[in-house]
Every structure is written in C-alpha cells, then in structure tokens.
Length: 220
Image (cartoon, rainbow, N blue to C red; front, side):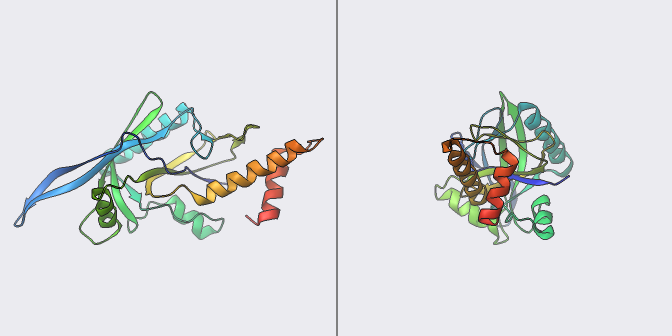
C-alpha cells in the first residue's frame, strides 16, 4: 500500500506555558531544565489545514507514544519537520526520529475530552537546536507543535475536509515555527480545483481525477 505523509499545521496552544525545573547540581550551581507544555492535537475537529483525526485514532496513537515514553524516558522532537518528498530518502527521514535534529524530549502525553496535551523538556548544552529553541522561548516566543505520521489513503469530503485514515501511525510531534508550507499549498491547490469544477455547469470528475489533474498541472 502506498504510504502518505501526514503533517499537521503548526498548532500554537492558547494554554502554552514554560517553567524551569531543577534537575541536578554541579560545581557551578543548580542545573535547570526548561520545560514547555500545552495542547498538541485535537480530535473530531478540523485543524487549520482541514485535517480531521478521529478520537479513536488519536487515543490509540497517544497510548502508543505513552508506552514509548515509559520505555525510553521520552520521545525526541525535531526542530521543524524533515522536508517532505516522494523519494526513498525523504520517506526514510520522515519516518525516523533523528536524534541529531532533536531539540526537545516529549516526556508526557495525556488525552482528555478529545484533546491531547503534551509536556516536553528542551535539550540544552550542546550548542544545538535545543539551545536556540530555549533562547527563543525565554525571549517570549511561543513555538508551535505539529504532528508527524504516515498512513494510507485519506478520505476527502466535498467541503474540503480531509479525514485522516484509521491506519495512520503517529511518529512524533515536532517543534515548528510555521505552518507546513507543503501541506498548505497542496490544500490550496486542491480547493481551487474543486471550486473551479463546482463553477462548471457539469461536474463529473471524481476526487481521484482531481488529484491526478493537480499532479500533472503543478508537478507535485
């Protein structure tokens, strides 16, 4: 089965918060870790790129990631998503949790009333992306969180909503600054094509034919 990459748009939680927790002490004094938390994902409601995740799907995948956290003491979170693409290398990169690109560890996930809440510890001290993220958060920036996963064929509705398939597999959540440009552009082109067809006197094309037209027109 062909695997499709599903990347949600950046979600900036209204309940975003950060604290500094004491995790140890050395000769220079206390060692503190910057912890960020907030809403990560929401079920049964379209997100900003019109994707809808069922409650059953998100509950199952959250439970799977919770088990990963218990076994490994956290899930690495990337600083921005790997670049999407159809090549074997691009698919491999997006399906793995790369430690070199990690800026934070997700240490807690909970789902309540169709909302996934998360907590992450920013990785500092190696002059990597975690240090940059920590500096931005301390300066007042509110980062976004975006899910990353793969699955089979999605279900497209006439209203433009996309129902993520139930075989979707969550890989991780990433810290991002911008919505997914790739998905935003693809969604825009899809909606433009549908609008064009709806304006025609006779609309006989299937969703698959619309997607095929988009691929041919934009080489995507």
